[in-house]
Image (cartoon, rainbow, N blue to C red; front, side):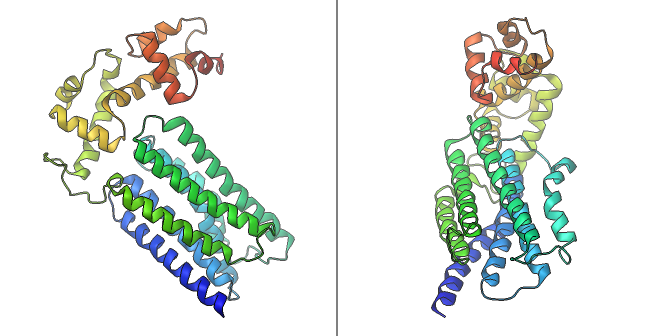
Length: 336
């Protein structure tokens, strides 16, 4: 009885926090926040199943829906990482590929075997754990490769989130392999880690920009307007290839989109999580990668640098290494 009360109390607080923040983030109009909200809610549903599973004989459908929620958490973590990096600017059908395993479990929840003593369950749950680990590792890889030029607080937040999900995976893997004998350890570990995550979120609340109507201090631009302006900036940058101009300045860009330079800077800093130089260089590196992939294998690297908008080789090499984790020569060698 004491164990039931303890697990129920600790798990209820953790689940309450997770559901609360998940709903708050879903109400945001910022794409990355919506993905984070979905992640927290699906993770909570998975843990909620664990709480009841520990004390109640659950119907087959509920057990499988819990696994479906589990299979959605990893993809949501990965897509959230891509979103805060600016790689994902809008939802696309191709992103739904990540949710095929979860969808299969939802559609077939009434017939997929889920008896803990069966060989099928052992095999299928092994795959569920493997899928979760792969997405944690993929997300860590994108942390290493794509987040070098992000705001330090945002990088730290993502690493904390990654650590929490990795910790939850580790506990459930240990339960599965019999290292931890108590199944209730899963919900308790989840709750403790959510307490930590909530504390870190409160300390970094400015990263989330939950209120889409709130104005930037000293400007007439709201957070929601800012997202629209960033999309406009991105469209103009790509259509006119402004980044190919080596001496492109903040004022030059501001003149093209009819906004004051200060407001352009605020929009870029807040919504791309990059400063102006890194924002422009991200387009130049994207152009350089295309040239290195398709161009002459014997062409000089300095020519690629100039053709992608850099005015000197050293700046190009430093920026390329920071954003790809490879030198230009190493990157080109993959394709030639």
